[in-house]
Length: 284
Length: 74
Image 1 (cartoon, each protein chain N blue to C red):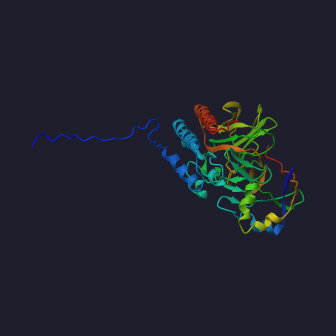
Image 2 (cartoon, rainbow over the protein chains, first blue to last red):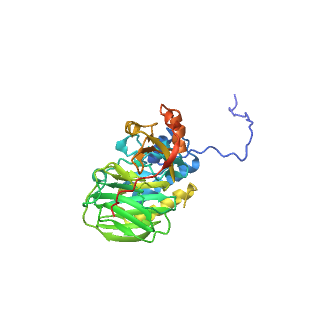
Image 3 (cartoon, rainbow over the protein chains, first blue to last red):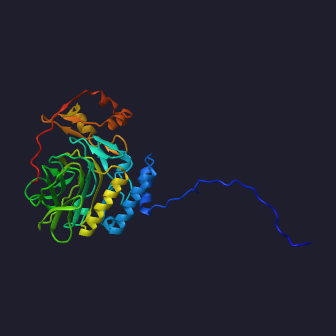
């Protein structure tokens, strides 16, 4: 018996130009979003998944994700896909999943209300679900128009210093916001050159409310009478104790609501949102 | 200019906030004269066509004139 040497040879075909399959691992929270959207029958593209994942990861890094109570990426092109709160993609009112009225048109560019009857219910009640004085509201508008319309809004009845939480992006070049203050304590800032863009109103630990468009401050003021609405914040209309007005027809491609942000967080957030919209080819 | 389908007050009351599917619910709005209207997107019409509410699509479209908005909080 000599040494047992394996002298067998194998033949195969060398294949050029075919990369081995890659397995992409997404952020665990964003994977839940993917699962929720795709459970409605929508198949997200790789571009959409990568854009959403980048947004979640980058807002986690800046802390904006943690501060957000409602975070709506408006991804997938249908009502079923757009309804999810990415912070908690569970199909319940308690998870702040959106419900849409009739009158919306949903596409891969965003969600567009008709401006006369359409609204969405976030189920976020400022008096219950947000820090009272310190809150941010944000809205990415793809529609350049002007009108006294509420992109986000709730008020406990008009007048008499009733609590209000609302964002009106563009009324004749003015941006109006109320951050859980008396309805008389609204911040009016001019200089809105377009109704399209990323609008944000913020108050963070100082009673100073500041309005932003595309990351640039439009102005600030100090308001001390903190009062919070006890009804749900509506999307694209003003919820006045269950009676609606100020319907908007601005197409939204993102909005978020949460607890007050720092200046550096707002800068990062603006960059992240622009990157997200650009990746999806729907930036304005 | 807006167009919608005028419905009776009874229809509006009965169907308000009723879901067409898992994501979208009916919302009726009064016009300047207090008549209720249903305004649908094309997507809504496709969704409703497959439901028991398809009869609403047979109502002709007419011009909707919104009521004067209440004084906003400014």
